[in-house]
Length: 220
Figure 1 (cartoon, rainbow, N blue to C red):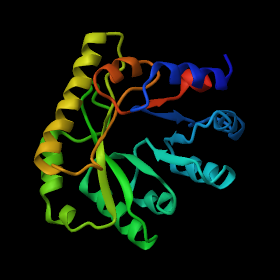
Figure 2: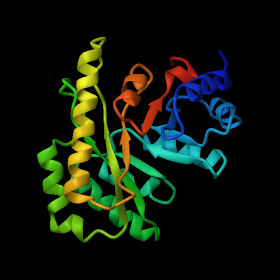
Figure 3: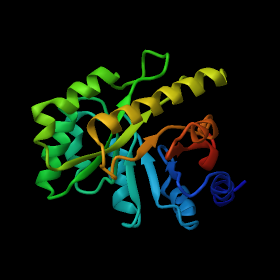
């Protein structure tokens, strides 16, 4: 199937409340432009350097998502234009995003990344760490970031019940934080979970945003 056909097929499977982020990392500009012709405007990149290079070459109505691990010293390169940073895993990073957003006279939307998978290699906060972050004086004084939800990745496994339970724990973290720290805040609404291999399960478990790469663009 072509890129255009793949996007159409995914759109047929998801309802309008779910945002499709096309993960374009390692893919050439031509592939992104093929997806763009279908009306796809949300794209996810893992690496800052690649994201900046593509931003400069592609149409300016694209919404860019930084979905990979982000180092504090790289924030300044994407702060002028990034739409959503999915991978906030600590106060130090959030502080830097706030600082660079202020310099660019912007408010940058962020997701808190949580560790729910069995693998030790995945980045992310535990719920207790997130609460500590949200209760900190530093966070409450930030004016140039907006936390709009949470993100997480399930274990890389064929075990569907494990994947489902990890997505359920992510959703439960979302509801708990919504109640404790974001009551009445309509902006706090995103649960970014689900990738090419497990997005259907993620949607069943309440995902509002899926990050799909190989199902659209083919494997590397």
